[in-house]
Every structure is written in C-alpha cells, then in structure tokens.
Image (cartoon, rainbow, N blue to C red; front, top):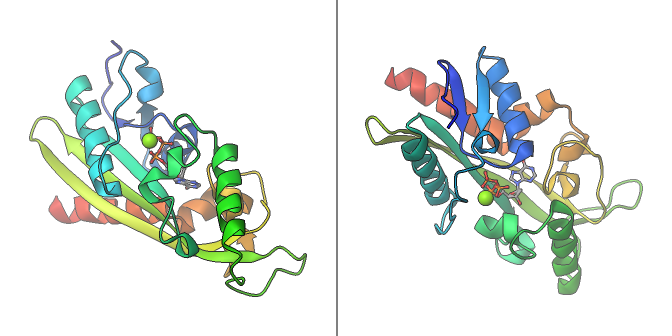
Length: 215
Ligand SMILES: O=c1nc[nH]c2c1ncn2[C@H]1C[C@H](O)[C@@H](COP(=O)(O)OP(=O)(O)OP(=O)(O)O)O1
Ligand SMILES: [Mg+2]
C-alpha cells in the first residue's frame, strides 16, 4: 500500500470532480491532495447514514482508520424545494446504484416536469425556465485516527433548478443549478468563482476558521 507523505492531504472520495476542487483549494495552501483513487484495494465505503454529516463521518473514519492517516471526507448533494428536499442524501444514486451524472440530471428534470407546478421565478431571456428553488449542501468531516476526533462543518448555496442544462464546467448537477445573482449556472463558473460561491467552498472556509480557532 502506498505510504502518505508528509504534508499531503488525504481526501476520502472517489469523485473526480470533488478531487479537482479540493486540489485547487489546497494548492492555494501549498498542499497536495491524494484521493481514494490512489488506493483501489480499499473496498467501497457504504454511505448508509441518514444525514450528510453522518455520511461524511463514516467516509472519513473508514479511510482514516484503514490508511492510518488524517482524512477529510465530503458528503454533499442537492435539495430541491418542489420535491420536498429530494434527492438529498440520495443525490449520487438518485436514478439508481452506479448512476451517471447525466442519468441523475435527466431524472431530476423528469420528476420536476411530472409535478406540473408553476415556475418558481420568471424565465431567463432565452426562455429557460426556473423550475424550483434548490440548495447544494456540503458536509465536511476531518478525522484523526490518532485521537478519534472529528472536526466538522457544513456549507450551503441557494439557487434554482433550470429546465435545460447550461455550461460544461464542474460536475454532477452543476449544469442545472442556476445562480440568479450571477446570471449563470454553476457549470458556467471558473474554478475560482465556483470555490468562492459553492457549498464546498463555504464548508472549507468554515473548516479553516475552526482549525485556526482550535489551534
Ligand atoms: O458541487 C457540486 N456540483 C454538482 N453536483 C454536486 C456537487 N456536490 C455534490 N453534488 C452531487 C453529485 C452527487 O450526485 C452527489 C454527491 O454524492 P456523494 O456521495 O457526496 O459523492 P460521490 O458518491 O460522488 O463521491 P464520494 O462519496 O466518494 O465522495 O451530489
Ligand atoms: Mg458517495
């Protein structure tokens, strides 16, 4: 098993989109990241918690204990107002186990269309409809196997689900998540802009503040 070198941050994730965002954020602090892609022999971690925070703790503890390294885990997802908060903690497997981002986005639009609700706000100039208020949530858990302690934060960002995808940046539900204050979808932002506004950026800044405060 590959040894973790000093100063490298272990991110307990297999999501390539998250890895890119953490790599960008930690590069600003002069740190490199490794993800679970570097440890293919580790079995998949069951995410059977009922909250984002619980799932983040499960992933951080399993990876941290197994690899005997401080581990940072991210459990995140989308809450859609018109769907009573769905897909929530089921965001990654909304359209079934092993679902692709495209499958999940298609299901989200199908479910919203089936409701036949009035739009949540006026359409965009090109006719794209704002179907529902929505929120991205990111729970972060940093776990130290030497002490058994967790440091945890949660970040959010509010927006709208739109009727047609925009942009090709980011990952997951980003092309369908519209930020009215920027007039763009999350997938139309640069890495810097996404980090500035996103649930993950929010949670990371809160984590940095907490670690600084706790010494
Ligand atoms: O910034 C984001 N932009 C768009 N979509 C996002 C974002 N953040 C989370 N999401 C969606 C993707 C996935 O459908 C679910 C996360 O599920 P979640 O279990 O936390 O991650 P995952 O299974 O992809 O990787 P892993 O558990 O190995 O970290 O929410
Ligand atoms: Mg997952």
